[in-house]
Length: 253
Image (cartoon, rainbow, N blue to C red; front, side):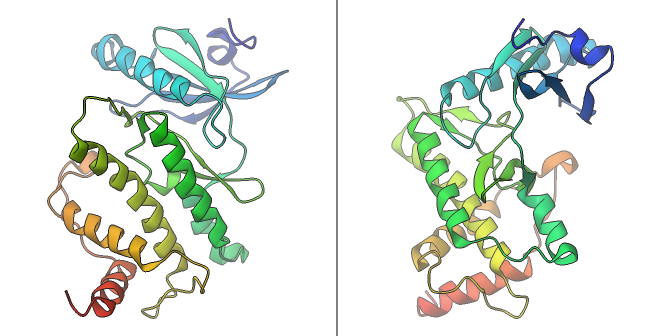
């Protein structure tokens, strides 16, 4: 038993269900304790063929990735196993970048400072130095805006360990995949709706935009998308504007 949390802590009431899970995903609970709030991911209520196979593997997989990132600011800490079907971690206070983007216009939150995205870039690089690639940070729900406009990352179930024996091109592809997600969020955040970007002179250099455009071209080859499995990607306005920006400044190359 870690931090006073047992299965009874959430199954007998007193906990908040953050996600009921679907398909191969765990149920997610928020559990309050005297030592603070924790999140528990649990496959115990999944169908047996998921619980005994995929569920057990995913719990161990994500637990090991987060243990490899222990002590790294911006990712969940105090990670612990409950049993074969569940593990827990400290709750990250804040809101997801996706939720903030949705609320920004209605609540007049304004743009995040560009420093947020520079810090997110450094967090990704620090994570890779620990041998972990996230691979789902393109999803704005997995990027957190923590107090003080600090970045965070959650939901590592799609992540992988970067093994030493991986070919160099594989390591680079993992690195570019995660970093391009930072630049995607950056340019989408500052797109002004009129074909330009309001990031100002202190933003990312043009080289970052080229990395994102290169990854956008590569992603055309990947037709699988979420639970729809197959989806034709339709370029968004900010993506078209970014291509014009990069290709225009590169002389149409």
